[in-house]
Length: 212
Image 1: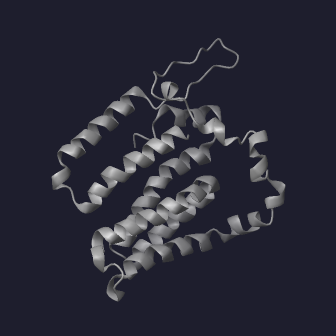
Image 2 (image 1 turned 60 degrees about the horizontal axis):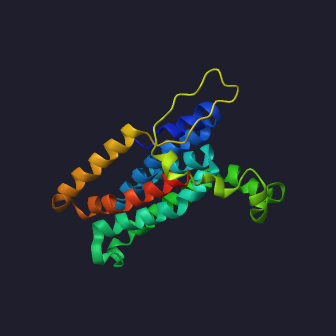
Image 3 (image 1 turned 45 degrees about the vertical axis):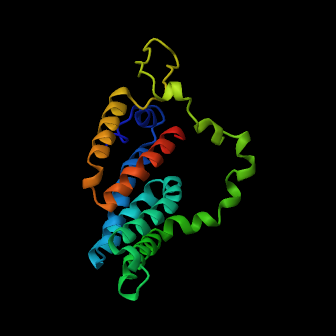
């Protein structure tokens, strides 16, 4: 929730008008939750829910969905290992790995009408090797640390083009830090799955924020 309400996301919403991207960022957390539940306790209902969330992510913003695919797979595998441990490869436990894969495939089938025609239109988009000469330059996504953790300055209403900095937000950083410290204090009482979240997600979150 704190990541969703960081100030730079409102830049995407109110300045760029990119509502699908703003929606997809919030939806990504629910996709991970659904696939984690599907891996921990597989059932037809959980497969359906996970596939619907994944399909909604693809339909809302295909780029974020593309970036989510490897993390989604890793997250599902870690969830299955957290439940089954070293027995994950035994036949009676393999469903914890295969059911998220089924949800992934079903989500792709539900959105075939959206992504399949796009494969035939790749010649009409900028090639990857020429991205440095377009507005899609990936180097522009790396925000300076000083600006990232700095104060949120209100825009000048008198300016023709107000300058808006890309900030995480002081309050958000404070609450994130307090939550992380609280989890470290309670580390011994956490389950393996909770410890995995504590170690992996701060790293992923920091990288995601820096590359926004």
